[in-house]
Image (cartoon, rainbow, N blue to C red; front, side):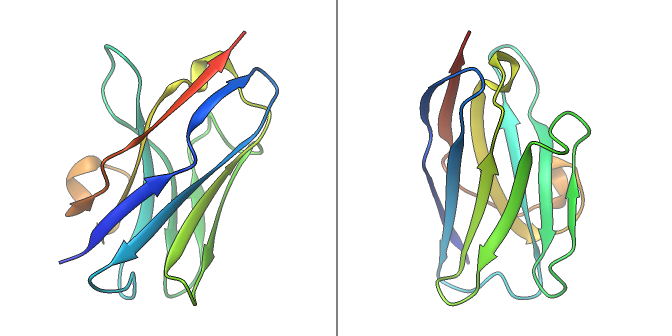
Amino acid sequence: QVQLVESGGGLVQAGGSLRLSCAASGRTFRGYAVGWFRQAPGKEREFVARMTWSSGRTLYADSVKGRFTISRDNANNTVYLQMNSLKPEDTAVYYCATGGYGVYEYDYEFWGQGTQVTVSS
């Protein structure tokens, strides 16, 4: 079992930045990828970014490419999502997930509780 806790969400103006954190306990991310997803009101949860833990290889959704960066702190078993040049359409609850790979919800077994990001225009 892996327990994931996200933090770092909040309210920011368009063009601003936030850094989300995803801390794992129970076991490490080793052997899995770590994905970030988001869900806006009335919309389905969508893929944002992913990092394969073993290789560090990253993948981003087109909508965030060049603005968001996923990174990790091996020692603290934490993954970050640095979000720059935020837009109102980035407003959503952001979730981290692990226990699998891929870009779909069903690819991942363990999920955090989510953290709200609100971008004002």
